[in-house]
Image (cartoon, rainbow, N blue to C red; front, side, top):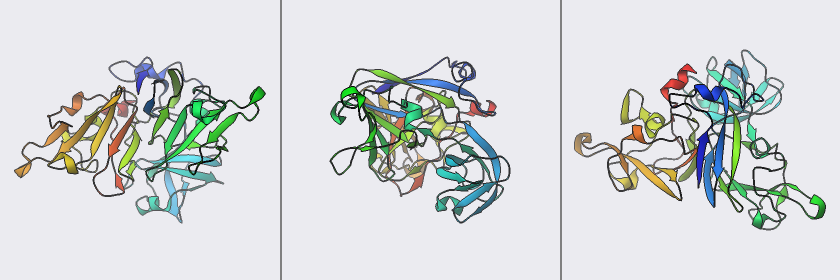
Length: 344
């Protein structure tokens, strides 16, 4: 498993995070910083909570045929992350491609996105930007069996798996590789072209000595609504300091009460969504009970059915979590930002 250290973050917020270490990651109007993810043996559940720089924030000028244009700001051609700030699609995060001022997005986004809604377009993180162009944040090996593996959810319950080869004699053939799911040799990939969506949790299977990964970037200050697309969903906790089970999933006006549009509640654990929070070699598991007759006894529970104070369950040391979805698929789960992020 892993622990997470947020460098220089004061207990009262993120003010100390905004200085120093991320000078190379410039952002317009958004705080920046860095986070160190400690990678221990063997499986580490992590998320990217410091993000690629915002390229533009604008209202949508046009939205049709799986394409949007912005009312203001320009975005260079290439892959992008599009975040919806307001409107019916608020919180949605999708991958897109910018070409000549037009951004192609999944057609399903336009079911809820409308002209004049606000969006932020962000540069994506990549295998190379997070783990190094030559995989220096990972254990490298000439063969897959001795290398660290990076498992990225594919949205259908499986993973795309990558590793860095140190190559043969003299480093011949060194580079990023993708595991062939059907068996056989891994294929060469361009690490700078493999984009990472920050809502996804990543599994790092560490085959070497304990190490760490330093992630630098921009802090997101608004809510996020990833989609649960399979039974087990590997997600980032998105917000690097001050997040709790309550800030993520509760009604902001009523801490301890599950917010509509987040998780599936049930009177019994067997039908409720489960939230797995890494804790050393194990997980702490939480769910929300809808209570008995008239809602009596409703509230957060642990896996033993004990009452839990959601405001006291910190997510600071858990950059990645797992949600087991027992409800309908797909299901959007609205993850809130801690209230003080609005002032950053």
